[in-house]
Image (cartoon, rainbow, N blue to C red; front, top):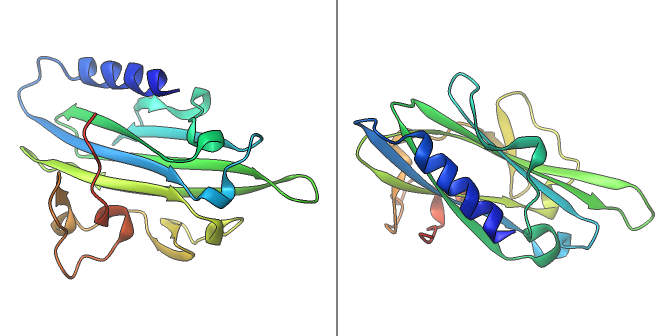
Length: 174
């Protein structure tokens, strides 16, 4: 599945070739070990402002569903205002059936910066519904949009008053 992420990276990089102002985002996707199962399915969908598909959506399954761990991806866009990331999981229930879990994030692109974000599927968010424009993070509902002031430069430590866990974890480059 790592090759699928790398293939997506090449597509994303080439989609912005030749444009003068590029911004970059390193995104990590993880799943809590308690949700890893041979029957777990995890999908990724990345779109940019205006709804244009960047990567994944219906056809993408990530290996973290069965293997655990974290996968990372670089997203490079030219002249985009924001990118929308959604990580969805379908987790088998012990008595049969499945439970759903997801996390979303809208990241404004900051020109001439490389920033890190992290999405993680968490058991505290199983079947948790949040109000519109919010998503479950560590069992609590948070806005899907992040404060642009809190964006963390690649490899840097977040500002002390920026406590959103989706921005707190650094994401390794591919």
